Length: 185
Image (cartoon, rainbow, N blue to C red):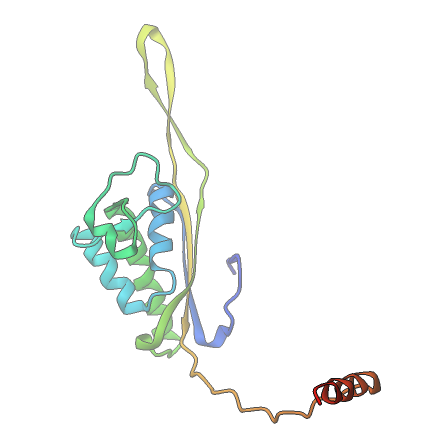
């Protein structure tokens, strides 16, 4: 059993998917994951398709240094955004995997939403690049671990109205009220 960072609120109405040591940039994948958090499954899948076709962008909120501006980011009240196609395809694959897991558990896939997305940086891969004057420099890559939990939307139940209880006053408060009433005459 693989350990997730948190459990679903209702495990019988939820499904999970996880990718370990995925060869996609951590920062791009983090922003992609944050962009789909809270979306319905179908909306998230369509959004990832649109990002792959560069119709909609991923807003970069945390890792936004030297990120170019695009008018597509106005949809999210941001100015900076990119189209991390590789990350979008990986997340789309995980969404498909979670959908298959949901169908296996006999959950209603039209009623699922992305409850939890977490992207962690995985151990970096080391290669080397050759520099001037016979030196060698590092040539690292930054893979990522991704986990997501899809939850079925719960039916909202209206809270019953509580009976209004009569306010209880102390003897001192009652005496003060009597003084205030008598002072007006």
